[in-house]
Every structure is written in C-alpha cells, then in structure tokens.
Length: 378
Image (tube, rainbow, N blue to C red):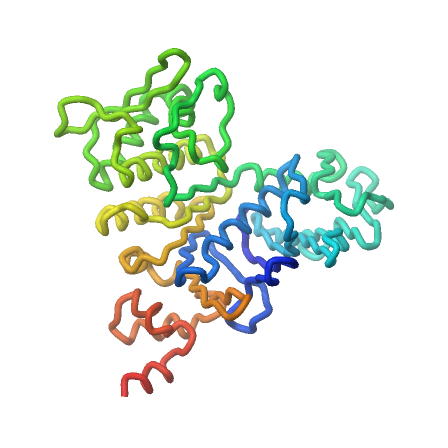
C-alpha cells in the first residue's frame, strides 16, 4: 500500500499547509519513489514529520493531545485496485469535527453523522464518541477490517533522520531491547542487526557487506558481541588490521551502515510499507551519496515499498532522475509542490535545455517553464 495523495494543514502554527503547484489547493500526489527537494525552511522536514505523525495517528496508543497544533489532513492510499481515503478535521478548539473513511466510493465511516459500517451486520450502526478520541483507533478486526489496513501501514512505517547520529555512540541493553524493533526509532542499529543475523543468518550479513561495498566501504566481516548485557557492533575493513566498532566509525560511514542494516532487515522481514529518509546523503561525499541513492532506488523499484527522501544538496539532486522529484516552493505559510504528477509538461520540457538537474531547481524552471527561461536567457 502506498500513500498516493495528501492534503495537510495545521491550525495553530501559522496555518502551515502543503498544496499542489497545479491549482494551489488540490491533493499533492506522490509515487513509489519520491525525492523532496527545496531550499532551507521550505517544508521538506515538515513534510516528513507530517507523514510520520499521520502514521502515528493510525498506530494504537497515540494521544492526539501530544501536539499543540493539531493538523487537519486527508490521505489517499492505493492498495492493489482499491483507493482508501481517510479524512481527519479539527475545529479551532482542537476538537475533532470530522473523521471519515471511504474505500473507493463506499463510505465506511462518517463521524459527523455518527455512522460506522459493520461488516457482519452488512450495514451502518450509530455510535457516539468523545470529542478527542479517534475512531480509527477503535479497531475491531471482525467488524471493521478496513481500520486494520491503516493501522498496519502506520505500524510498519520506517523513519530515518540521516543527518542525525543514527545510533552512533549509543550502547544498547540486549535484555531490555530483545524482541523490540521500532523503525520509527532509528537509533537501534545493533538491536536490528542482532535480529537480522538471528533470523537470516549469514545471508543477512552478506547483504550488508555487499551493499557497503557498493558505496565504496570495503568491509569483509561484521561482528556482534554481548558483554555485560550490552551489544557491541563492529566491522572489519580490508585495509585496517583491527575491527572498527560502530561507535568509532566516521559519521558518514556510521550513517550509511545504520541505514543499510535497517533497510535490509525491514525488506527481508517484509516489514515496511513506507520509508522516510530525511537529509539523504548528509555527511557523505558525492560518489558515495550517488551510489547510496541508486541502491535505495534499486531496492524500492518494483516493490511494494514507498520511499520519501529529502535533500537540498546539489550533488544528490544531480544523482536522482527528475521523474522522482517533488520540488517545494515556499509561498508564505504554504509549501507548494511541483512534481511530475501536476507539472508533467514542464518536467518533460526541461530535457531540451541541456542543463543538469540542479539547474532545474536553481533557475525555478519547475515553476516558470520555457517562457520565463527563454526571457531570462535573452
């Protein structure tokens, strides 16, 4: 299942919203692979955080009171031939005034009317719920299996902040973390690796080694040991006499290693539905950034995995085909998105300029197209 389209607006914090560049009010559409590019403060990280928060909404146990600026949003998911549309709307007192769910054109939930579909009853029954409680979290797999679909997407979403430490320098208790993996907490690479090695044995280790070599980190083995209930992860590099512990790796190598370990485990275990990677390539040189992104795209293409990556790095932009781009242009409190879904002609026209991908962004060709480009050139 992939996130096909999104509307999003925050009530309290400056009314920030995302909109489509085609009409300035429609859903922003996405594909399986998405590179979100934009200048600083344009809304790249805000988008990642918004998708992450929506996934938390669908995951049991989240209190909507965890945010002071409750956002209203609509999402459309595509699952096989079905379109699943969910809407959550707040008033200015941060009380829920609408929550509805449609599968294709069939309504399953209308909160405002107090109507919820029951599968075994094959019809709607009335309900009443407190103002700040979410119906989507009142799951009954027998009567409302459609809620399970959203819950599973939210539970399986993986979130990586590549500009952070990705677990470098943290020492994890094996006992406390055994059996617990959450890909929304990307700081437990040693725990994830221990699960992967236990479940997939040497195949898992070899996958990591092969992928690290593809991005020019020439490692030959991965070590994992438990001392006094703490996990210690290390790698053996070809040109070094001793193994390097994860905590002693360079920041760029540690980030890449952590991401590759967690991506491979989630893919082999068939866990994720959506992968969010903020600041992809941060801390890596151009060649390694390029190879890492190519690796991620290769893993995602043709799969049921959806990937969102953000960047403002020109080298990363030049590494990723424009068909995967969504460019954010900040207009006041709006993040306006231009991508292949809403600006196909403009994206296709750029191929005739002979310029590189970064110029598509730097000249704002995505907004102005050929007419303004030619006028500027003259």
